Image (cartoon, rainbow, N blue to C red; front, side, top):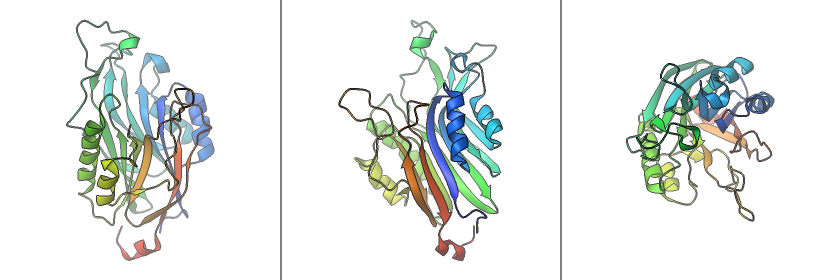
Length: 269
């Protein structure tokens, strides 16, 4: 059995870490065991040249792995490049971090010779990824998939990226403990994504009806439900919540508790 009665998981697109003190305050209050974060800067001008993942890990005394999504051409220099990506943090040891760089990408972010390398154009090198880690929780392995699917594309491209992750997850025994979470940039309750997830035996970790995970952008319009968390294997979730009062990012954090199902005692970890 895991020593704690349950693990607290938080998934959050932190908008580069622009409001880092408020981000850290919320995460400290959550006292989470695992953090799955998207849009995390390293050495970018807009976030004061900080390694945002390292700052959060140091403040919260956690281990972390970072996956580089893009080099941010307007935020660094040749001598001192800036990066942007995903970070997974844990109170438990992290091993075997790796990236899935999706085969299908948008060309929206590619540099163009006629555009100056200044902030409004946000030119980048790289592409969307999933960051995969294995977390050793007192001898049991928890596999985490940290996703950021493309925002500048249609659902067809996003679904192809999601399918790559699900294909990768199929390599693991179905009795393995797995969490998949992130900014999917689509409402998976309304299209083929739900069917793909069900076939892969991933279950929604936040069991309430779909709740907006971004603030409203227009008057009389709700925000978008684009941040999601799913689990697979002999584990149970409860206390799932979208923290819609937290204003430290342009996305709301998601949290839930994860516990090992009683039936899991019959299976090796």
